[in-house]
Length: 173
Image (cartoon, rainbow, N blue to C red; front, side):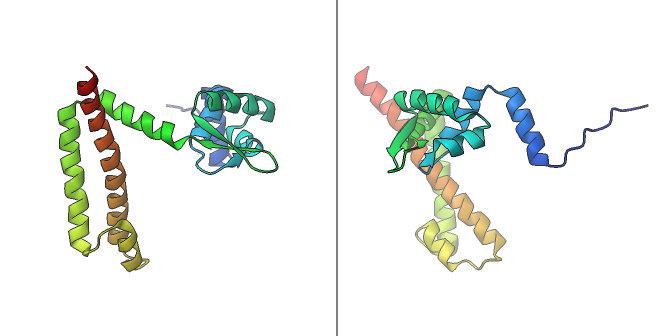
């Protein structure tokens, strides 16, 4: 039995980038990078991350800005871009609303609230920030609980908003 030799890469990240470029279009890569960019960033840096030419990136960023997906900010020495957080939140809420029934969202909300309350009670603190201040750097279980709390808190807000979409639909129907 013989097998094909595994192609050697000097850099695993380089291999992942090669796969990404092969599996996506330039515009898909630009959109993926732009929608993950949370701080105002120059088009040149987005072009580098997306492995695309700067003129193509600028054209796509202008289109994404027109669609409301990306915000264009005057950086003094040129335009800066970042994802539009309101649109990002809306898309996350809409996805939840489309994928889960109102009853499933309510059940999820209850479980998320239980998770937050359990961590809050376990440590006797009122927020993830307060928990972080009391944790030792090597308290892995504590930091895992911190991450769990932050994630549950984030999902709790999104779930509440998705439930509100059901309420709003009932009002306008």
